[in-house]
Length: 235
Image (cartoon, rainbow, N blue to C red):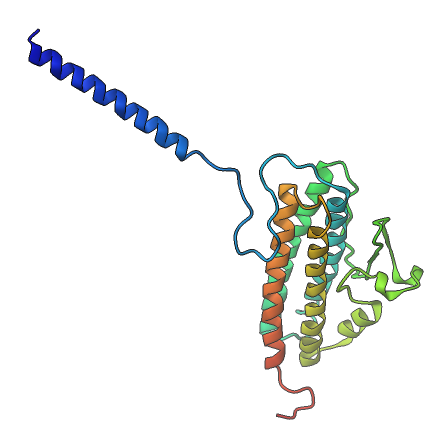
C-alpha cells in the first residue's frame, strides 16, 4: 500500500471516530429532562420529577371534588328543561362534558389506591366537609352553613334555581354557577397550600386543570351575566 493510501485511510478513520463522539455528546445534551410544572399556570409550580406518594389531603380533595362536581352537573342538567337560552344551554353542556370526565378520573384515582369511591349525588344535595376531613354531612345535621364545601349551593338556593324558568333561570344559573366555580378554585388553592399535597402527578394535573378551566369559565359567565337585560326591563 502506498504512503498516500495509508494516509487517506488513517484520515477517514479519525474523521469517523470524531463524528461518533460528536453524536454521543449531542445525544447526552438532548436527553429528556424531568417534567416540570407548565409555565404560566394559575396554580403554584410543584415538583413533578420522581414518584411522589399521595397524601390524605389528596384523597380528601378528590373525594370532595366529586361531590362538588356532582352538584354542578345537576344545575347544568336543568338548563334544557327550564327554558334556558341557547347560550346557557351551550355553556351547561360544556360544563357537563368536562366535569363528567373529571369525576371519572377522580373515581378511578381513588379506586386504584384502594380508597372509598363516592358516587355522584344526582339529587344535587349540598354536601359539607370538615376541615379535619372526617367526612360529609348534610346541612340538616350541621349547625353552621359555613360547613358547606366552598361555593356549594344550599338547599334553598337549589330549590330557587329549580323553580326558575326562562330568563330568570339564566340569571340565577350564571349567578350561582359563578359562586360554585369560585368555590372549586378555593378548594384547589387550599390543596396547593397544604404542605406535601398535590405532588403526585395526577392530583397536580387535575387540580391545576380545575383551577384554570373554572377561572376561565367564571370570566365568561360574568360577561354573559352583564350582557343580560335588566331584571326589571329598564335599560
